[in-house]
Length: 314
Figure 1 (cartoon, rainbow, N blue to C red):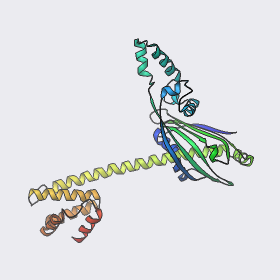
Figure 2: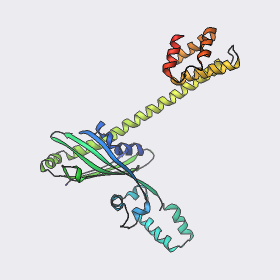
Figure 3: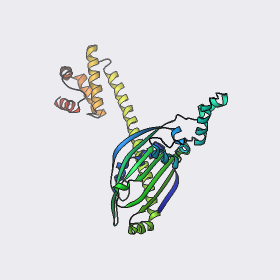
Figure 4: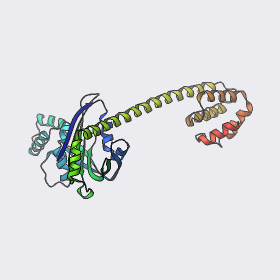
């Protein structure tokens, strides 16, 4: 059996990192030696924290609960399983003293757990290693992801199980615990991989971290652009309102012009400076004013193609 484990504290968003690991279908875009990846058969199983804490061996999802117990899921969400179990026994006795009522508030025995399950497939291409396998993936956002190879859908592994345990350390940092254990059916594969095990493991974890950093940076950039766009549109919006406030036409026409130009801003068919020139042109030309008013109900002012064509014909 081959083993690799690591523990890191990183400055990343907990949910963002969970999502990077959770989305197996995206592995082919960033994970070294992964040449293809896919997902199938998604399902969500609703559980309670008391299901994990109890010793009920006849639960319909006992196999899933065993994995959550094995990797101590409750500790990741700061629930003491022994406390939950003890609390359940106290409830059966119906002793409603003040201390017990306090326990009911701090121990979330009815904590809802949504276990997501699906089949995740990976095709590996590394040197002479070239194979595919499918795993049963079990996830609870944003703390736990467990993958176990489906023995019916692999010719390579006799056993493979990996687990990501994630938790918030402080406002800025998260703790990543990654463990993987596996055994090849082929001694050649096993001997070859053992030579590079730490290198392969470190590269895999680093790839996930870098992908999360990349996605967070893109999100921040998009948010910054969105805020800038909102500010620019607001400035143009104010300009349009003030421009037509004292326009030499009747009030109804003013409202129509304001609505038209605001829609031109929405579809972003022209730059801000071009819009200002266009407004000046409209103010100075009675003919262009009439064209706008004639076409106001004919043109869909949110359709960039129609708007561009109309402006080009002015």
